[in-house]
Image (cartoon, rainbow, N blue to C red; front, side):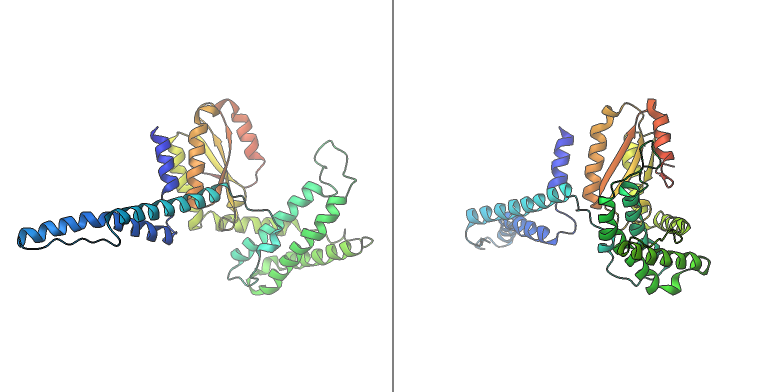
Length: 326
Protein backbone atom coordinates (compact mmCIF):
# COMPACT_ATOMS: atom_id res chain seq x y z
CA UNK A 1 0.00 0.00 0.00
CA UNK A 2 2.77 2.40 0.96
CA UNK A 3 4.63 1.68 -2.30
CA UNK A 4 1.54 2.64 -4.33
CA UNK A 5 1.12 5.87 -2.36
CA UNK A 6 4.81 6.66 -2.86
CA UNK A 7 4.49 6.13 -6.62
CA UNK A 8 1.46 8.44 -6.80
CA UNK A 9 3.34 11.11 -4.85
CA UNK A 10 6.30 10.81 -7.25
CA UNK A 11 3.95 11.15 -10.20
CA UNK A 12 2.16 14.20 -8.81
CA UNK A 13 5.28 15.93 -7.51
CA UNK A 14 5.98 18.99 -9.71
CA UNK A 15 9.03 18.72 -11.93
CA UNK A 16 12.00 20.57 -10.56
CA UNK A 17 12.39 22.46 -13.86
CA UNK A 18 8.73 23.26 -14.26
CA UNK A 19 8.55 26.77 -12.84
CA UNK A 20 5.01 27.32 -14.03
CA UNK A 21 3.68 24.44 -11.94
CA UNK A 22 5.41 25.78 -8.84
CA UNK A 23 4.07 29.27 -9.48
CA UNK A 24 0.44 28.19 -9.87
CA UNK A 25 0.57 25.80 -6.90
CA UNK A 26 2.15 28.52 -4.75
CA UNK A 27 -0.60 30.99 -5.68
CA UNK A 28 -3.26 28.42 -4.86
CA UNK A 29 -1.63 27.52 -1.55
CA UNK A 30 -1.41 31.21 -0.67
CA UNK A 31 -5.14 31.65 -1.27
CA UNK A 32 -5.90 28.63 0.93
CA UNK A 33 -3.63 29.74 3.77
CA UNK A 34 -4.69 33.42 3.66
CA UNK A 35 -7.70 33.04 6.06
CA UNK A 36 -5.49 31.24 8.58
CA UNK A 37 -2.82 33.93 8.39
CA UNK A 38 -5.47 36.62 8.66
CA UNK A 39 -6.93 35.01 11.78
CA UNK A 40 -3.50 34.74 13.39
CA UNK A 41 -2.71 38.37 12.54
CA UNK A 42 -6.10 39.59 13.80
CA UNK A 43 -5.70 37.65 17.07
CA UNK A 44 -2.30 39.22 17.71
CA UNK A 45 -3.52 42.74 16.93
CA UNK A 46 -6.67 42.34 19.07
CA UNK A 47 -4.54 41.14 21.98
CA UNK A 48 -2.58 44.39 21.86
CA UNK A 49 -5.56 46.60 21.01
CA UNK A 50 -9.05 45.38 22.05
CA UNK A 51 -10.59 48.11 19.89
CA UNK A 52 -8.91 46.79 16.76
CA UNK A 53 -11.41 45.80 14.06
CA UNK A 54 -10.41 42.51 12.40
CA UNK A 55 -9.90 42.61 8.65
CA UNK A 56 -10.59 39.95 6.04
CA UNK A 57 -8.06 39.22 3.31
CA UNK A 58 -10.30 37.95 0.53
CA UNK A 59 -10.29 38.43 -3.22
CA UNK A 60 -13.94 37.65 -3.95
CA UNK A 61 -15.03 36.08 -0.68
CA UNK A 62 -13.82 33.22 1.54
CA UNK A 63 -15.78 30.48 -0.24
CA UNK A 64 -14.84 31.53 -3.75
CA UNK A 65 -11.22 32.08 -2.73
CA UNK A 66 -11.07 28.48 -1.52
CA UNK A 67 -12.69 27.16 -4.70
CA UNK A 68 -10.31 29.16 -6.92
CA UNK A 69 -7.33 27.94 -4.90
CA UNK A 70 -8.36 24.29 -5.21
CA UNK A 71 -8.97 24.67 -8.94
CA UNK A 72 -5.53 26.24 -9.43
CA UNK A 73 -3.74 23.53 -7.45
CA UNK A 74 -5.68 20.65 -9.01
CA UNK A 75 -5.26 22.07 -12.50
CA UNK A 76 -1.51 22.62 -12.13
CA UNK A 77 -0.87 19.15 -10.71
CA UNK A 78 -3.10 17.48 -13.32
CA UNK A 79 -1.29 19.27 -16.13
CA UNK A 80 2.06 18.35 -14.61
CA UNK A 81 1.02 14.72 -14.16
CA UNK A 82 -0.13 14.53 -17.78
CA UNK A 83 3.27 15.78 -18.94
CA UNK A 84 5.02 13.26 -16.70
CA UNK A 85 3.01 10.41 -18.16
CA UNK A 86 3.86 11.61 -21.65
CA UNK A 87 7.54 11.70 -20.69
CA UNK A 88 7.39 8.20 -19.26
CA UNK A 89 5.62 6.70 -22.26
CA UNK A 90 7.43 8.70 -24.91
CA UNK A 91 9.88 6.85 -27.11
CA UNK A 92 11.75 9.13 -29.48
CA UNK A 93 11.42 8.19 -33.11
CA UNK A 94 14.51 6.68 -34.64
CA UNK A 95 16.20 8.74 -37.30
CA UNK A 96 19.51 8.67 -39.15
CA UNK A 97 22.36 9.87 -36.95
CA UNK A 98 23.42 12.63 -39.35
CA UNK A 99 20.19 14.55 -38.62
CA UNK A 100 21.29 15.10 -35.01
CA UNK A 101 24.60 16.76 -35.96
CA UNK A 102 23.97 20.47 -36.37
CA UNK A 103 27.27 22.02 -35.35
CA UNK A 104 30.46 20.90 -37.12
CA UNK A 105 32.89 22.88 -34.98
CA UNK A 106 33.94 21.20 -31.73
CA UNK A 107 36.50 22.00 -29.04
CA UNK A 108 38.37 18.74 -28.48
CA UNK A 109 39.22 15.42 -30.10
CA UNK A 110 37.03 13.70 -27.49
CA UNK A 111 34.06 15.81 -28.56
CA UNK A 112 34.86 15.13 -32.21
CA UNK A 113 34.81 11.39 -31.55
CA UNK A 114 31.52 11.64 -29.65
CA UNK A 115 29.98 13.28 -32.70
CA UNK A 116 31.43 10.70 -35.07
CA UNK A 117 30.61 7.62 -32.97
CA UNK A 118 26.79 7.64 -33.52
CA UNK A 119 27.36 8.00 -37.27
CA UNK A 120 29.72 5.03 -37.39
CA UNK A 121 27.45 3.01 -35.12
CA UNK A 122 24.45 3.77 -37.31
CA UNK A 123 26.31 2.64 -40.41
CA UNK A 124 27.58 -0.53 -38.77
CA UNK A 125 24.11 -1.53 -37.59
CA UNK A 126 22.69 -1.12 -41.10
CA UNK A 127 25.56 -3.04 -42.69
CA UNK A 128 25.25 -5.94 -40.25
CA UNK A 129 21.46 -6.00 -40.52
CA UNK A 130 20.76 -5.64 -44.24
CA UNK A 131 24.20 -5.48 -45.84
CA UNK A 132 25.53 -7.96 -48.42
CA UNK A 133 27.43 -9.99 -45.81
CA UNK A 134 25.00 -9.57 -42.91
CA UNK A 135 24.67 -13.33 -42.50
CA UNK A 136 28.32 -14.30 -42.87
CA UNK A 137 28.65 -15.30 -39.17
CA UNK A 138 25.69 -17.67 -39.37
CA UNK A 139 24.85 -20.82 -41.28
CA UNK A 140 22.50 -18.87 -43.52
CA UNK A 141 23.34 -18.23 -47.17
CA UNK A 142 24.69 -14.85 -48.13
CA UNK A 143 22.04 -12.23 -48.72
CA UNK A 144 20.97 -11.94 -52.33
CA UNK A 145 18.10 -9.46 -52.06
CA UNK A 146 19.76 -6.04 -51.79
CA UNK A 147 16.60 -3.93 -51.90
CA UNK A 148 16.84 -2.75 -48.28
CA UNK A 149 20.62 -2.39 -48.49
CA UNK A 150 20.42 -0.23 -51.61
CA UNK A 151 17.78 1.93 -49.95
CA UNK A 152 19.56 2.45 -46.63
CA UNK A 153 23.00 3.05 -48.08
CA UNK A 154 21.57 5.98 -50.09
CA UNK A 155 19.20 7.33 -47.44
CA UNK A 156 21.42 6.86 -44.38
CA UNK A 157 24.98 5.63 -44.91
CA UNK A 158 25.98 8.16 -47.56
CA UNK A 159 24.60 11.17 -45.58
CA UNK A 160 26.20 9.78 -42.41
CA UNK A 161 29.53 9.46 -44.22
CA UNK A 162 29.22 13.00 -45.58
CA UNK A 163 28.72 14.29 -42.05
CA UNK A 164 31.77 12.35 -40.81
CA UNK A 165 33.87 13.84 -43.57
CA UNK A 166 32.53 17.33 -42.83
CA UNK A 167 33.43 16.97 -39.14
CA UNK A 168 36.96 15.86 -39.99
CA UNK A 169 37.45 18.66 -42.51
CA UNK A 170 36.10 21.29 -40.10
CA UNK A 171 38.41 20.26 -37.25
CA UNK A 172 41.81 19.29 -38.72
CA UNK A 173 43.86 20.70 -35.82
CA UNK A 174 42.11 18.43 -33.30
CA UNK A 175 43.13 15.20 -35.03
CA UNK A 176 46.24 13.60 -33.46
CA UNK A 177 49.11 13.24 -35.90
CA UNK A 178 49.34 9.47 -35.27
CA UNK A 179 45.92 8.88 -36.86
CA UNK A 180 46.17 11.33 -39.75
CA UNK A 181 46.88 8.48 -42.14
CA UNK A 182 43.78 6.60 -40.91
CA UNK A 183 41.75 9.76 -41.35
CA UNK A 184 42.89 10.12 -44.95
CA UNK A 185 42.00 6.47 -45.62
CA UNK A 186 38.56 7.05 -44.16
CA UNK A 187 37.93 10.09 -46.33
CA UNK A 188 39.01 8.16 -49.43
CA UNK A 189 36.70 5.30 -48.42
CA UNK A 190 33.82 7.74 -47.99
CA UNK A 191 34.40 9.24 -51.44
CA UNK A 192 34.81 5.82 -53.04
CA UNK A 193 31.67 4.44 -51.42
CA UNK A 194 29.62 7.42 -52.56
CA UNK A 195 30.96 7.01 -56.10
CA UNK A 196 29.97 3.34 -55.98
CA UNK A 197 26.45 4.28 -54.88
CA UNK A 198 26.13 6.66 -57.82
CA UNK A 199 27.85 4.29 -60.23
CA UNK A 200 27.41 0.60 -59.23
CA UNK A 201 30.05 -0.45 -61.77
CA UNK A 202 32.69 1.44 -59.80
CA UNK A 203 34.75 -0.98 -57.69
CA UNK A 204 35.64 0.47 -54.29
CA UNK A 205 37.03 -2.79 -52.84
CA UNK A 206 40.52 -1.25 -52.74
CA UNK A 207 39.30 1.47 -50.39
CA UNK A 208 37.71 -0.46 -47.52
CA UNK A 209 36.58 1.17 -44.32
CA UNK A 210 39.55 1.45 -41.89
CA UNK A 211 38.36 -0.49 -38.84
CA UNK A 212 41.26 0.89 -36.81
CA UNK A 213 39.71 4.34 -37.02
CA UNK A 214 36.48 3.04 -35.47
CA UNK A 215 38.44 1.37 -32.68
CA UNK A 216 40.16 4.65 -31.81
CA UNK A 217 36.87 6.53 -31.81
CA UNK A 218 35.29 3.93 -29.53
CA UNK A 219 38.15 3.93 -27.03
CA UNK A 220 38.28 7.72 -26.96
CA UNK A 221 34.54 8.00 -26.41
CA UNK A 222 34.56 5.30 -23.75
CA UNK A 223 37.36 6.86 -21.70
CA UNK A 224 35.73 10.27 -21.93
CA UNK A 225 32.21 9.03 -21.17
CA UNK A 226 32.85 6.95 -18.04
CA UNK A 227 34.56 9.89 -16.34
CA UNK A 228 31.92 12.47 -17.30
CA UNK A 229 29.79 14.00 -14.53
CA UNK A 230 26.48 12.93 -16.03
CA UNK A 231 27.59 9.29 -16.37
CA UNK A 232 29.10 9.13 -12.89
CA UNK A 233 25.92 10.62 -11.41
CA UNK A 234 23.70 8.03 -13.10
CA UNK A 235 26.02 5.18 -12.11
CA UNK A 236 26.12 6.24 -8.45
CA UNK A 237 22.34 6.62 -8.34
CA UNK A 238 21.81 3.19 -9.86
CA UNK A 239 24.37 1.56 -7.58
CA UNK A 240 22.58 2.95 -4.53
CA UNK A 241 19.17 1.74 -5.73
CA UNK A 242 20.34 -1.69 -6.87
CA UNK A 243 22.27 -2.26 -3.66
CA UNK A 244 19.01 -1.94 -1.74
CA UNK A 245 17.53 -4.88 -3.62
CA UNK A 246 20.78 -6.83 -3.18
CA UNK A 247 21.74 -7.25 -6.83
CA UNK A 248 24.76 -9.60 -6.92
CA UNK A 249 26.45 -7.91 -9.87
CA UNK A 250 25.45 -5.45 -12.56
CA UNK A 251 27.26 -4.07 -15.57
CA UNK A 252 26.64 -1.24 -18.00
CA UNK A 253 26.70 -1.77 -21.76
CA UNK A 254 25.49 0.07 -24.85
CA UNK A 255 25.73 3.58 -26.26
CA UNK A 256 25.67 5.32 -22.87
CA UNK A 257 29.27 4.12 -22.45
CA UNK A 258 30.25 6.26 -25.43
CA UNK A 259 27.83 9.18 -25.69
CA UNK A 260 26.08 9.61 -22.30
CA UNK A 261 24.84 13.12 -23.06
CA UNK A 262 23.05 12.28 -26.31
CA UNK A 263 22.20 8.64 -25.62
CA UNK A 264 18.46 8.21 -25.15
CA UNK A 265 18.75 5.23 -22.81
CA UNK A 266 21.00 3.25 -20.52
CA UNK A 267 21.47 -0.51 -20.78
CA UNK A 268 22.40 -2.65 -17.78
CA UNK A 269 22.93 -6.38 -17.29
CA UNK A 270 21.90 -7.79 -13.90
CA UNK A 271 22.93 -10.92 -12.03
CA UNK A 272 20.13 -11.45 -9.52
CA UNK A 273 20.52 -13.07 -6.10
CA UNK A 274 17.20 -14.90 -6.51
CA UNK A 275 14.78 -15.84 -9.28
CA UNK A 276 13.74 -13.10 -11.70
CA UNK A 277 10.10 -12.87 -10.68
CA UNK A 278 10.89 -12.04 -7.06
CA UNK A 279 12.61 -8.78 -7.99
CA UNK A 280 10.58 -7.84 -11.05
CA UNK A 281 8.49 -5.22 -9.27
CA UNK A 282 11.50 -3.66 -7.53
CA UNK A 283 13.39 -3.38 -10.81
CA UNK A 284 10.37 -1.82 -12.51
CA UNK A 285 10.20 0.77 -9.73
CA UNK A 286 13.89 1.58 -10.22
CA UNK A 287 13.36 1.97 -13.97
CA UNK A 288 10.38 4.25 -13.31
CA UNK A 289 12.35 6.45 -10.90
CA UNK A 290 15.34 6.52 -13.26
CA UNK A 291 13.18 7.83 -16.10
CA UNK A 292 11.69 10.51 -13.85
CA UNK A 293 15.08 11.64 -12.57
CA UNK A 294 17.29 11.46 -15.65
CA UNK A 295 14.68 11.73 -18.46
CA UNK A 296 16.06 8.71 -20.31
CA UNK A 297 14.96 5.08 -20.31
CA UNK A 298 16.67 2.31 -18.38
CA UNK A 299 16.75 -1.12 -20.05
CA UNK A 300 17.74 -4.23 -18.14
CA UNK A 301 18.73 -7.75 -19.12
CA UNK A 302 18.48 -9.96 -16.04
CA UNK A 303 19.95 -13.37 -15.21
CA UNK A 304 19.30 -15.49 -12.13
CA UNK A 305 22.06 -17.29 -10.20
CA UNK A 306 21.39 -20.53 -12.08
CA UNK A 307 21.94 -18.62 -15.35
CA UNK A 308 25.40 -17.32 -14.53
CA UNK A 309 26.90 -18.93 -17.65
CA UNK A 310 24.35 -17.06 -19.76
CA UNK A 311 25.23 -13.87 -17.89
CA UNK A 312 28.92 -14.25 -18.65
CA UNK A 313 28.29 -15.29 -22.26
CA UNK A 314 26.01 -12.29 -22.86
CA UNK A 315 28.64 -9.91 -21.50
CA UNK A 316 31.36 -11.56 -23.58
CA UNK A 317 29.47 -10.42 -26.70
CA UNK A 318 30.04 -6.80 -25.69
CA UNK A 319 33.54 -5.45 -26.23
CA UNK A 320 32.87 -2.54 -23.90
CA UNK A 321 31.19 -2.93 -20.51
CA UNK A 322 31.64 -1.42 -17.08
CA UNK A 323 30.96 -3.06 -13.72
CA UNK A 324 28.43 -0.91 -11.92
CA UNK A 325 29.03 -2.15 -8.39
CA UNK A 326 32.74 -2.77 -8.75
